[in-house]
Length: 176
View 1 (cartoon, rainbow, N blue to C red):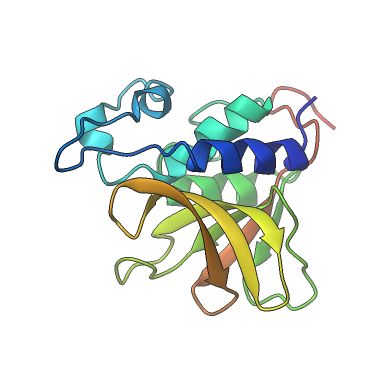
View 2: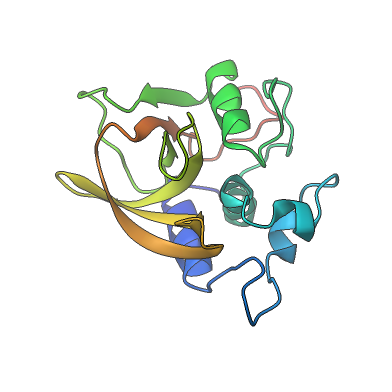
C-alpha cells in the first residue's frame, strides 16, 4: 500500500541514483520520468524536471493519480504550479502554507518552493525525507539547476511556499 514513508524511502533511493538531464559528457537518464508525461520529451524536460521527479516517485510508491488531474488548471504535474493546483483543488489533500507555524513537516510530504533558482513563485519542488528543527532533508530532481537529483538539507525559510500532504493509501479515483 502507498504511504508517505514509502514515498520518502523511494524518493531518497531515486535521488541518489542519481537521475540527470543532459550533462557535458553524459546523455540524460530521465527517460523513466519523462515517459509518464505523453506530451513531453527528454529535450523539453531537460533542466526542468523537478516536478516530474516528484510525480515519478509518487507513482513508484503506489499513489494513484493522473499526470494531469482536473484540478490542474495551469498545467500537468510535470510543473510545480500543477502540484499546487492539485493540492488546493482536491480537498482530500492537505495544503499548508510554508509559514504555518502549527504545521510540522513529515517524511513523504511534498515541499513547494518560491525563488530557489529564479525569481519566480513555485519554481522548485521536492519530497521531505526528514524534518529537523530549522531545516528539512529533501529529495529533489534538477537541483541547483545543474540537472541532477540529490538529497539536500534546506532551511525552513521564506523560500518554502507550501507543504503538500497526500493521505496514506490515497487514490484519486476513490472518494474517501
